[in-house]
Image (tube, rainbow, N blue to C red):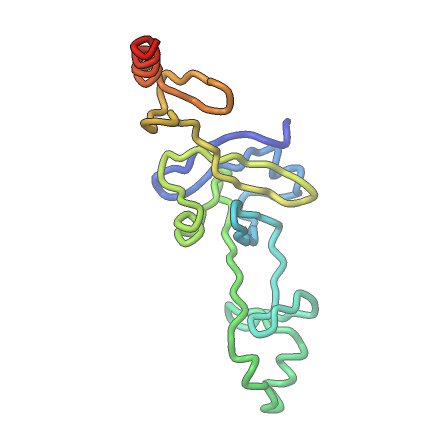
Length: 172
């Protein structure tokens, strides 16, 4: 399997992760993936529980639905939890469903201007899955995505090319 492929966002805001990609990461269906957002991508990594208060990823215990590290548990027990620690460490975690699909948070989709039916490129590198918006090629003058011709570094649709050619003939 190649490390890069394209897929579409479905009406529920999900993308499909190929079985081969999940196997490379040692991820099975119903596994959790942690995600983070960059300026141009959503990055998934296998989920490691971390303390909901400080973000520590080692020595965690699950209390209810929340993971806490031993240091924060001790601080809570001794009523020594600093006020500066009151902000909960935010972690986006999603489960891979039985069809290999994973939901992209709405705030991430908005940040990357992604909507239902948009193409995204999924790639795998160094144990991480990258989801990038696929660049859409559009006519430079009207924005059409159909019947495009490349001229230098620009794309023009057939209709605009006809107009440009007609104009260029009248100027001669």
